[in-house]
Image 1 (cartoon, rainbow, N blue to C red):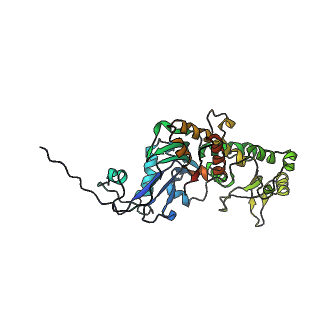
Image 2: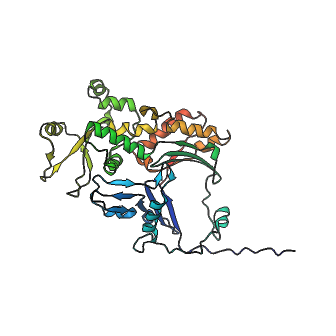
Image 3: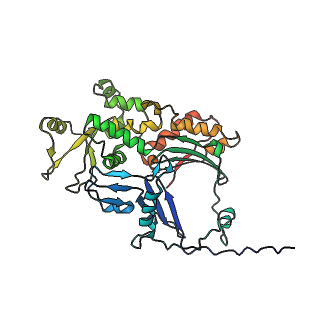
Length: 363
């Protein structure tokens, strides 16, 4: 009779590196007993080439001061890793460079006790934190947005739905709008992406906000709400000056200053530095509106709330109430002001009245 092999339980490694290899950035850090957000490092997941042909790899971009006409190459496109050579160069710079904060020593004795690590409860630990059995995860990232039902830690593949709208499409759409209305920024991906993160918000009443920014909005002024005085939509966005080392920022709109600029060109600020700025109105909320109404640009796709309901229809009816009560949103797009409130409002309108809808954003 053959002897049964004995399984020797391996000890957990002294250091565990956790990596989220996103399309726009890599989020990575070492796991500690007491989790702390300061342990997480964000590394640009791209190669960038300047006008003088210098190439920046990954975290080296943090030292770059001039992003003018910077050309980017990203290894991940539309959620798929399509350029292994570029990704390897970024990983080598991030994890194998001895000067990196995330430096790890490669070893052939790879810890692969996956079954014990994930298939059973933590060894020697009395954990009171039991994960929810049913979770609906919405990941709205750089390349696309996915809705994934998770049951007992496993994704339900037949109910996963994908929306081909992410941060990159929003940035490209904003580039087109700004290039038509203001300056030619088609080749300024980094500049426009930074502007998007600072100025864009999701409107909870798109039609009303559109009327507020409309040129002939006398009717909108008569219907102004009290809170509108403190939340003006039209702002001035001052473009960054890479020569002076200043970052772009937004400020309250000054109609008199904007009129002077139209006559005289660029204006100098109190310090004597000439600054260029754009007056932005409906661009601020019309761009992220694509997540909820893709048909605005002719995309034949359902919006995010409808995609959530389509995902739920792919589940057994008994799981749907539990999924609706445990919706977790992750990804960079959910950080825009108003995103969570708009999503919860529209999902509540589509969900059955007897179901509880709870939506939370991952910390």
